[in-house]
Length: 288
Image (tube, rainbow, N blue to C red):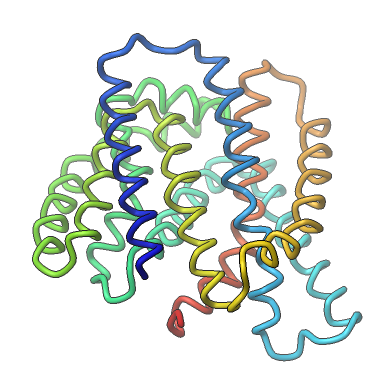
């Protein structure tokens, strides 16, 4: 728990500094931001999902080569189904991706945090960017899917923004009475999502909060040292890179910006679904 509190404190400071920098400094070149975002997410964000074999071991019946082969193929099949939804029903994909992200991110906060606080925290990086960065959010969603899907989703998020922000303020006040570290994390995520451009805010959150928090929990869950966790992650990360390379060359011809956004978030969404099935099972039964 101490390590998680330290990690949460470091993230909170980084989030607040990023928010200030985004307000006072001139905007960065959008394509440069895309390149850096892609590198950071792949190198610092995605590796936490490479620890999924540890959670698979907790499922009854996954023992022996045959069982592991079935698990790997089922994992890849689920990922492929997500890619199919993105291809054939982009609006459904976009809403689904946002919804499961809210649910999944809500698990970041400490055990014992109220469901109310978890829910609105999980949606902060999804909903709040629509307050001050609706145009940029529309552009990104259009690149990820198409302009029609973005035109459906962003206005709906704009309607949700201010009630969501009011709920977050209430969550910070209530959490401060029970656990100041939780209140600080919720506040930091909220400020970051409001102040920073959507891609920058999401990247800081994903790489400095969600991913390291999951790695620390996995270390406790598995009772393994960090080098041992790294050894577990090597083969899955190799598979992710191969999948990502295939996705890059399989994307339809489009602008470089569109290809980068699709490369990052379509692959991320495809991996999130099977990842959630493994991790959420442990979360709902109770972390060690």
